Length: 371
Ligand SMILES: CC(=O)SCCNC(=O)CCNC(=O)[C@H](O)C(C)(C)COP(=O)(O)OP(=O)(O)OC[C@H]1O[C@@H](n2cnc3c(N)ncnc32)[C@H](O)[C@@H]1OP(=O)(O)O
Ligand SMILES: O=C([O-])CC(=O)C(=O)O
Image 1: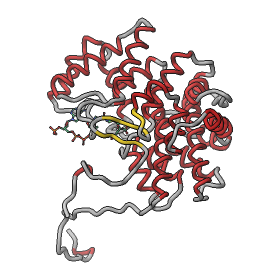
Image 2: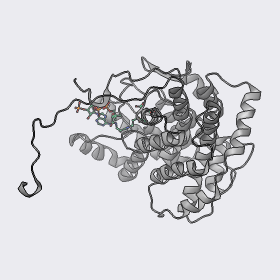
Image 3: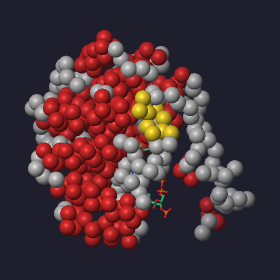
Image 4: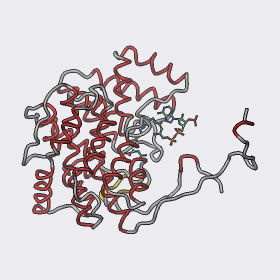
């Protein structure tokens, strides 16, 4: 038995949700380019769960479900208020989603219909939780979700308590579409491993949030923002990045296990970042990001991934760094829950082997004889 570090190249599941072949990403067979340009996040969530784009009636039904489920239990809000103010937002989100199970009397109902309902419910409630966590951190009261608006609009409204502008809504909606699913990435794999024991959907999504938090995965978008803040000025990019490269440090937001010639999602976030800068007459963040990209691609041949330009996009939308990875989680909830439902269709516990590299033939030594 020989281990493959990081399971690189190992095919660990079959799936009909999303695929990456020769650098082309599709959701249910539809190219991400088409979805990025034409689809709303609500349509994409439906597509991931049900395998087809919704007709007008189905889409409306899903929107009504989101409206119904978006409010979160008051007891959960009270619990979140007890979290320390400086808590990591992903840690708080992980705890809040875990707690949601306690308030759902159907949490352990493993029928397909109950699980589909939980997927929709989780998708509706994640934006409410993330916005509430942000408001509580700022010492403000959480805001109740609106009815009859998109997830992107509702989230921005609940964050700020005022009607967001159309450009921000459109940009966030497109970002949600781009982050919704990505084959067997680490957090989705974590979700599938968890629910393959026949544990419940809340456990699966809680595991996934834990995996997404790390800076080698979803946490990279926040790390990119911290890096841009540390650099501070376009004139400092060269010295800062060169020193990191000389020290063989990783630059967050670059590289990918599967894409070697570039992440097809990154170009949309780059475009959005450029356009937002032009609109606000302040392209500093965008220009810094482009300069970083030129250096990393020039010297290491590495291309930006989905996390790199999302950092400057969210910042230009007036969103704080602590919310970048939680926003990723809001979007990826659609993909995680679609994978969880798929896992249960033909389930088998996921239990690989380890190549043992430890000591052999050791003897038990009595406590009093140990050094
Ligand atoms: C949504 C997402 O999860 S997208 C990914 C978000 N993560 C990041 O942006 C973090 C930065 N990137 C990375 O750490 C990696 O590229 C990963 C985690 C995305 C992929 O990891 P792996 O496929 O295991 O590649 P690995 O880390 O082994 O890198 C291969 C080589 O490229 C180098 N490399 C990879 N990414 C980077 C980077 N961002 N900066 C500098 N060097 C890098 C590694 O140092 C390694 O070099 P070596 O062979 O000389 O040791
Ligand atoms: O697929 C991966 O390894 C990481 C990624 O880009 C994602 O989850 O969107």
